[in-house]
Every structure is written in C-alpha cells, then in structure tokens.
Image 1 (tube, one colour):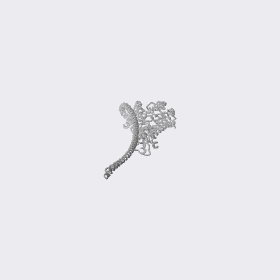
Image 2 (cartoon, one colour; image 1 turned 135 degrees about the vertical axis):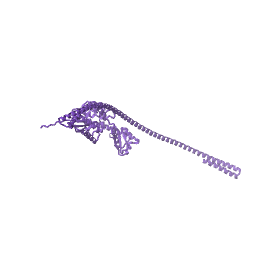
Image 3 (cartoon, helix red, strand yellow; image 1 turned 90 degrees about the vertical axis):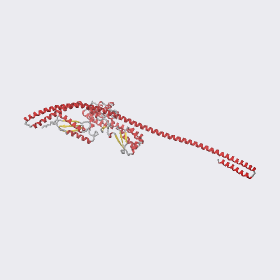
Image 4 (cartoon, rainbow, N blue to C red; image 1 turned 90 degrees about the horizontal axis):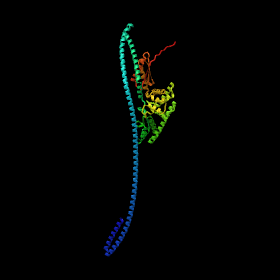
Length: 557
C-alpha cells in the first residue's frame, strides 16, 4: 500500500512540474516535456506497482502461512483441551462410582445389621412367648392349688369345729376334775385349774400336731410332682439377661486421638471392625477408653484382643482389621481346644468326639451367676467321682456325667429350649453313654434319673453351685443371711441349736426332746419355714430339718 501511495505522489509531482514548465516554454515543448514526463512517470509507476504487487503477494503468502499455522495450533489446543476435559470427566465419574459403591456397601452393612437385629428380636419374642406360656401354666397350677387349699381350709374349719366341741367337753371335764381334786388333794381351785389347763394344752397341741402332720403328708403327695415341674421352669438357665460386667469389655487407649483413627474416614474403620467381629463398638466421652458390647463372650474376646493389637500396631484400616481379626479368631479356636484338652487330661477322660470337645472348650467363655461354667463342670466331675468312689459306683462314668451335664450351655444362644434337654440331645448325637445323657437331661428335674451316676452328677452340681463364693454374692451379705437363718430358728421355744449348712440352702435344728414331741417337730419346721419366707430374701429354696433325739447315758462302775 505504501508503494502505491508513492507512485501516485510521483505522478502528481510530474504533472505539477509539467504544468510549470509549460507556462515558460512553448506549447510544443511543453507537450513534448509533458509526454516524456508522463512516460517516465508511467514507467516508474509501473515498476513501483509491480514491486508493490510482488510485496503484496509475499505478504499474502506469509499471512496465509501464519493463518494456517494458527489454525493448526488452534486444532492442537482444542484436541488437548478436549482430552484434558475427557480425563477430568472420567476421573470424576470413577470417583462418583467409588462413592456409589461405598454407599452401597454401607447400605448393605446396614441391612445386614438390621436383619441381625430383627433375628435377635424374633428370638427374644419367641423366648417371651415361651415364658408367657410357662406363666400361664403356672397360673393354672396355682388356680388348682388354690382350690386344693380351699378344700384344706374347709378341712381345717371342720377340725376347728371338732376342737371347739372337744373344748366344751374339756371344760366340763375341768369342772368335774376341779371338784375331784378339791375333794381328794385338798387343792385350791386356782391350783387345780392351772394343772388342768396344762394337761388340756398338752392334749390339744398333741392332737393338732398329729393332724397337721397328716394334712401335710396328704398335701405333699398331691402337689410334689407339680411343684418339681414349677421349680424346674423357674431355674435360670440362660445368660440372656446379664449385668454389664458380663456383656461388655473395655479397651484402654494410649490417647484420645486414637479414637479418631479407630473410627476412620467417614466411619470406615469402625464399620469394618464391627462387620468382621459381630460386636458393637461404643466410642463415647470416656477418656482414653472404648467399650465392646456383645452377648456372645467368644465374639467379645476376639474383638477385645484384636482391638488391643490394632491399637498397639497403629496400622488401622479395613484390610488390616480383617487380617488381625481372622488371626485372633484362629488363636481363640485353638485356645478353646487347648482348654478342653487340659480339662480332659486332668480328669483322665478320653474317647471324646472332636465336636463335643469344641463345645466343652467354649464353656471357658460362659458364666452362670458369675461362676465360670468350665470351672464349674470340672468341679462337678471331681465331686461326682469322689462320691462314686465312696459308694462303689463307676468313678469314670460319674466323672464323665459331671463334666458334660451342662454342655447345653455352650449352644443355648443358638438353639431354643432348655439347656438340660439340649445337652442331652447333643450327647446322644455324639454317642455318649446313657448315664451321661441322663445326667444332662435330669439334673434340673426335667427328666427322671435312671442311673446312680446321673444322680451323683446332679448332687455334685448342687454342691458346686452352693459353696460359698461360687456364685455372685458379697461375703457380707452371705454372712448376714446365714446369721439371720440361725437366729430365726433359735427364736422358737424348745430349740437348742440351729445350724445353717450347704451355703444357707439347709437349716438343721436340734430341739429339746422333753419339750418337743415327734408330732410337734413337723409343726415347728413349718412355723420356722414360714417365718424365714417372711423375713429373709434368698435364691431358690431352703430346706428346714428338725432333729429330735433321746439319749440314755449310764456308767459302769
């Protein structure tokens, strides 16, 4: 463009010069000069124009090259931006898919926990239904018992009427005796009345004691079997309603920051731990401690050991949690077998089915009223074996019956029914002798005893549970209860000494034979039992035994 402007300017300059020259010279010369100048200017302009065209062509070619390069770079940048955007979209998609999978896993875990909770509630409801049925049966029995008591009450009223009639006769006899005594012995009326009253009181007490003993024997014959069934249903067999000390375990932490690591990002670690162990992990405001809660003692022990190892190691994430829990579970399974082998070796018992051995080892993690069940059955086995040796029964069979009598407690959370009958079914399944099966079935009165060894196992069970300190009760409360039983018994007239034995499950009373007759002894036992029921709180039942004996002593000189 600049060259074109220069050419035009040159043309204009030439025209101006020609005009000036033309004014001074002649018209011809002016024309020649003007023609020459025009030709020269035309040639210069032509050259300048050609040169401008060449430069313009070059500039156009450069512009086209620059435009082409710009388009290529734009296409490359467009492709790169598209690829980056695509990668970012894919990453965002993968992140969303991962979050969706995590949410699905959380939802699945929540559904499983809800299913477990529903199953637990169903079992609980079934247990409550059974208890309700038992209470209904007990109410029916009590109604029958009430009717029988009404009949006995009518009998007592009849006896009272007879006694009243006898009293009238005795009054007449007293009057006659008073006259006779005054005539014969020269006694005053007051003295004679006291003597007759004493005789009358002795006769009435004797008649009343004899009649009471007869009524008691008749009543016992009719209700003894029913009472046994009621007592069997009221014995606590399951540890479903336990205190917190037997359903939780506390794990100490080095610091409170560890709680955050146990919970994990968005709660992943704690969910993985609860899913792997089957327990509830409670993390509250308690400083430097977390609580493990579960009705199953084996799960609780696995969770406790696994959590302690994870805290000590410091590496807490879902994969590590599953690894540690599985390893601890294998160790606990081996410990269960070792515990069973140790007990069997101590007792000298062999030929035990492997599955039965596993169930025996599980009793190490069960308690009943605070008493360890494995230790309890080992004590029962020793006691039964000692008693069998004393009476000449089969010692090994008695030990075996004592050891396996509570085997049903190892599975009572998984199987519905009485632990005694469940244990009998298990022992029958694994080919145990009939005496061992009967010991498990009958030790709570739910079946009849068929062998001496099964009876010895039941006696050993009562002794092991009754000894002081075996079951959960403070020493002070135990001593106060024993002293109260003895003081109640000694408060009655005619009692020489009272002894509370078998950890307070029996009271033996020594009476003065010259003041208490054989018939009155039964009535005294009844009175003492009623007073104990009113004033003392105790588990189970207490046997009252009144002992009356006469001794004749002489010396050879």
